[in-house]
Structures are given as structure tokens and as C-alpha cells.
Image (cartoon, rainbow, N blue to C red; front, side, top):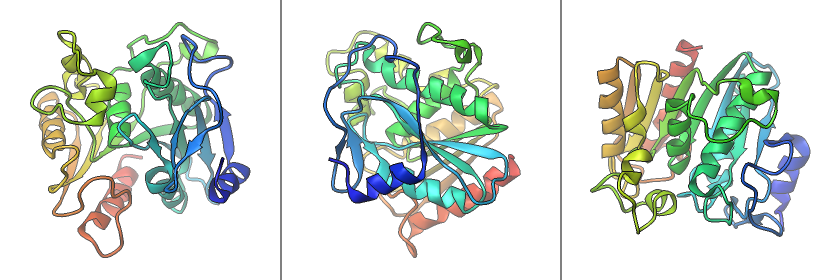
Length: 284
């Protein structure tokens, strides 16, 4: 059952289905959306984007993908607060509700990437400029989507799928970048490649292996005491971008752990958002 807060959000903002009919491959869970006490979603029956519109739009949009190790999506702790924060700065925010690969979707681990590509196409059809902002597993998802805009993950559903799903910038906050050893302990690794791993699967789902000079300007932020996504992930992504000639900025936070979202006021983790706002403005 949806919480009162969730209900108000649904009433106040636009919910846009990603697909005209069933998602590619079909399948999926049944029953109502599961919403945890902290506002995390699972049992995603119908993937969508939720539009948050500012009072004074600046003509630019940010597509947000929250984390949760591809087991749930952290709407309450990450996506919604960030959407409202972006609205206050004039950005239209689109929050992605993507399929979780182990919820009986026949597309399996390709399902969330299909949703991310479709979401970028949808937002691109409505907005002048499209930025991507992903957290944790959502950072892995949008990093993969940004790196592989020409990767065909599903048969075209309509004319919208003729659009190449490119983003103008990408922000990755405490992201999972690599699934290759020794960084194999995350839920992202478990959900996307599993324990019985075919050769090459870990490399196939590691973002750094697809970064070229066409990768969009990149913003990274992570705490040095992150024990979920090893801080090596953002160092690896920074160095990979530099080698490819991609503009990149990394904010290294002394303390904050993992999953801090906007960060609690007065803590080291609360610094990244204003740096990102300035960076985004410079790349607008």
C-alpha cells in the first residue's frame, strides 16, 4: 500500500509510462508496488518516469536514477529530495522507476538498461538539454546508458526509439562502476551477473570498459569511508575519463559512508550538491 507521502507525490507530479504496451520481453511481477518505511520501491510492475516541474524552468532537465543494488529503488532517501532540490534551481527533474532484474522480467539484467534508454529518449523528446544523475546502482545504470547510446537493447516500439539516447552530462554519486574482481561484493554485482558467472560477464557490465572520447562531461562524488561501493570506483572512472579526454570532476568526501543522498546539513557529505549545481550550470 502506498504511503500518504507517496500518494501526495503521485497527485502533484506527472507520471509518464515508459512503454506503450508491455516492456520488451514481457514478464514481470504482479500485485501492488512495494514501498518500504523509508520510501524505497520494489515490485516494479510498470516502469515510469515521474516529472517534477519547477516554478521557474530554466529549460534543462535532469533524469535521476536512485540506487538500491538493483533490489529496490531509493525514492524517499535519494530521488525525491534531489528532484525537489533541482526544482529549486530551475531544473525539471525526471525520476526513473526502472525494472529490477530479478522480478521475473524475461529481459533479465537487460531490463533496467532498456528502461534507462527509453527514459532518456522520452525526456529528450520533451526537453532541450538532458542531464543524467545516478546514485549507487542508479549510477551504474545511467553510466552504462551514457557510455553505450548506440547499443541496441530492444526492438523499436515506436518512432521514439529512432532517437539515439544520448545525455549532455552525467553525474555519478557513490556509483558502482566496475563489477570486475576484486570488486565483486556488491548487490549490483549479484543482481547483474550473479554467482555462476559466464566468462566476460563482469567486464561486459563494467562502465569503465565503454568510456570513449564521446562520453559526456562527468561529475563524480564519493566518500572515502564508503564500504558498499569501494572508493576505487570513482577513482577508476576519473582516470578512465582523463585518458579518454572526457572532462571530469571528482569530489572526494572525507566522511559520509554510502547512500547519503543530499547529505545531512553540517556533515562532509553535504558539500557535493552545491559543487554539482555550479558544475551543471557551467555545462548548461
